[in-house]
Image (cartoon, rainbow, N blue to C red; front, side, top):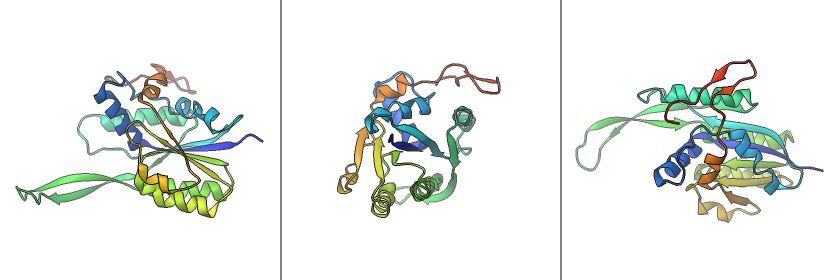
Length: 212
């Protein structure tokens, strides 16, 4: 029977990968990414006749950043939801940090929270409920190492494919077997861009943000 694949996307891991690809000149645009098209483009590598069980996108809205970054991100997530992608949001936690090297001044930083935990919980739940045969995790974050190892131990009949975004490859996952890994080249971001504008099922149009 055809395999059922669920995709778990680490949103900021992909975002920083796209930024790196743009900075390297590997692509000229990429932020208006069609995540559903990107995911389905890998079905053939998973196995003949593989179908999409679910696509889940994990991120957080950076309202603390200046400008309209969070508003642009929110528009992209509206498109994802319209495509049937489930969006699971964490949050940013404020941290007061003191410079230990020279100036000893305090400054404010923000750290994304809950994304790794949410991916881990959803991954284990999907296997437990038999919602998929294969989990495809799009991330290179080592914080997911423990949950990947535990999921494969607890559910030995399931498979995990780790898809490393451009420049996010991580050799720490080599210690886990069986675990298939693939690398997402920068060109994929440019190849799978959303229409401009995107027409939602409701008939509303969402235009690509300026500069994207």
